[in-house]
Length: 298
Image (cartoon, rainbow, N blue to C red; front, side, top):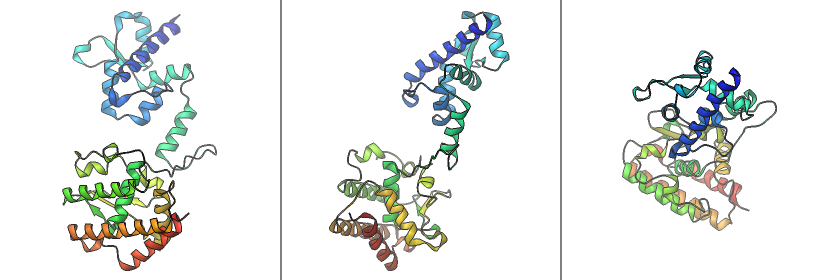
């Protein structure tokens, strides 16, 4: 009897949590209904606290013994918001317990998700290697090539010339959209023109893994492709190009157009930024030309 009353409390809290998330634009629950995994890996702390507190329930609606047992087991806790006196909220332990009972979550699933999202490799022979770039990751990677940011010494910083960099990003998007790289998207679908340039480079947590560590963000608003790592510029450039254009193949004339665009864009960027380190050197240009033909010509 006690067990069933405790489960009623946990189920009610979970149902209210689900309803709260449905009303929260940035926390729409997954169709699978697996809230524990979704909250753990997809929501930040502030948003999680907000929805958890908004989904509180009053203790008076349940038997005191069952409520106290849930509190003692750490499945719920008292809500600390002043407007919700005598309310209780779910804890991570409580949400996991009820979803485990309803076969929505397991330790193995958590470990698999953790391995896939936070560590490289897989669990029990499963591979989590994902080299497919998002549209934003593709745009940033192309931009870094156009800007000649090929090493720590030629890194891109967005602290100056923000307006110029935004214009160049739009030009890059427009050209490659015409080449089928962004077939169903507009620039604002990927990056808002209203955003500060620093926002362009946020939410790129997976880009380093997906490019085998070649994308580098050492902090301080600095970004570059580490193409000279292990003295393998040619091979590393091929890796980046293959990641960017994984779904695209072109004729030789189209590759020439892409190459000409990149070199022209780099010259424009170099003139605006007045940074000699960001100019694509002659030997780099030739390697880039060969790489584009090697990777993209069908």
